[in-house]
Length: 253
Length: 217
Image (cartoon, rainbow over all chains, first blue to last red; front, side):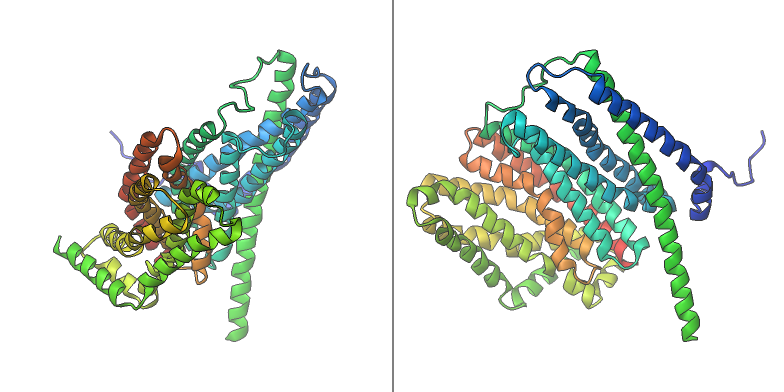
């Protein structure tokens, strides 16, 4: 039996160095961007020209192809932040901090877009921009949590210390979100038993599912591209701050 | 256990001798409740209908107002650093602080709630239910508040940020709190409220201690 004594340089350790991370992931950025653009082209083509109108909602059903991916991302991004928070607290992975910080504004944006497109869709179909329905209410609360986390990031001077504190709060939020969702559902069924939402709508034909799936992947890849780019920007921003600090020390000495 | 008791006694002494903090909170609670009729009109029927919600809102705001004194004075005079080095684990310290915080900021509100019940034209039955729901729900508010105060303790303007962070997390408490007074399934809501409080009080000291120790060094 031989013992492995040399430290293994796995990809996991390699990307722990911010500079290495940027050089390793930069080649991914362009292919991912092109892939996202192609997915959007295909998805929008299907959504606008190659899918039928709904027999009740008419053309407004096409809002769904934008609304549903955004609603999915509003929760997926919080998942990414939760995993990054674990990365910060458990493995102390330096890039987990950066990933967590870069994801928060994106999550807030996708959540706001989900609410916005939902309001645009709700007006012609239900006759109201806003309804205190369970799903809409919990999405709004999720937006507030995202905004709170962004405020928290901006309040700290020391970003390394901020990361660990915010990781704790992100995890507390992750435990709480299912509870909030459950309580809001309980509350909204209590207030309006005949909800405008049917349980799961009419069954969708494949002609509607295809553009939905393509758009779903398009938006997910859009998030991945933006997230990666935001992480690179954050790494550079920190480097600039370090250089400025060094320059200021040089002037003072 | 003696260290824990010493911690409890210290916190209680600080809270009771620290001037009129407790009375100020009670006054705030009563004033918020008393302002409502000026905003919505003195119609007794309307007041009676919204009274449970208003009492909960007043209690929620009063608890948010009292958050800043949970960790900030200890952070500013440096005793939080000493407490981290102590034999007693930081989670136990936070738990002691949480218990005393509830006793000096939530208990007085519950005691003062008859005033609001009278001002807002509550009937006796609703009043008793409000009392029970406040008693069961405020521990959860205090626990969430402790997490928020711990997260923001090392930020200079943290007192402003903590309420923004905590308010979304406290929504279930408000829902089940008012639900246990007004809704048709009030006993279910009361059980949910109790479960929420137990869970929050059990987990919050660990989360708050983790936040404090990661923010301090």
